[in-house]
Image 1 (cartoon, rainbow, N blue to C red):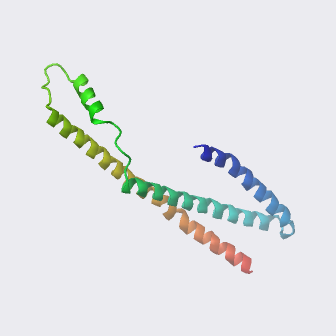
Image 2 (image 1 turned 180 degrees about the vertical axis):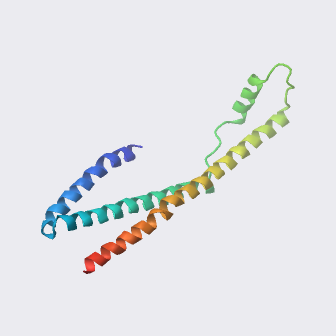
Image 3 (image 1 turned 135 degrees about the horizontal axis):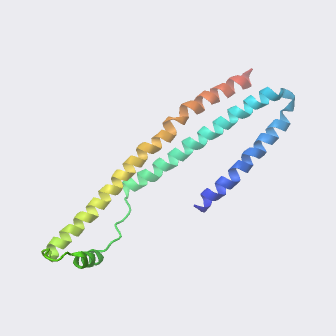
Length: 148
């Protein structure tokens, strides 16, 4: 979270400095050409950051899919909570039934984490599939302008 905070503070400053330096350096091109180039580079930068972020998110979700987070509640805690929470008139579960319920809860939690990771991978693909064609188009435009 600290890194994200530093990035959100530092990144706009870097972009502003880049815009100023580029505009001063290419003043002889004319205002309109400088603005068009800046716009192209800013779109390239933004779409590249989205693609990179999507790739990182896919990697993290794949790691959760391969090795889901552990279930942190011990059998003793589960048993104690179940014993304290039972309602009057409810039959007492045997240790074997309680153990089976605990194992089922652990399995259900792991499956829920895996499903969540699959869902995250699908959502993260949107951060690659949507901006990538835009990046490729603007990179093509940039190459054509530099060839002229």
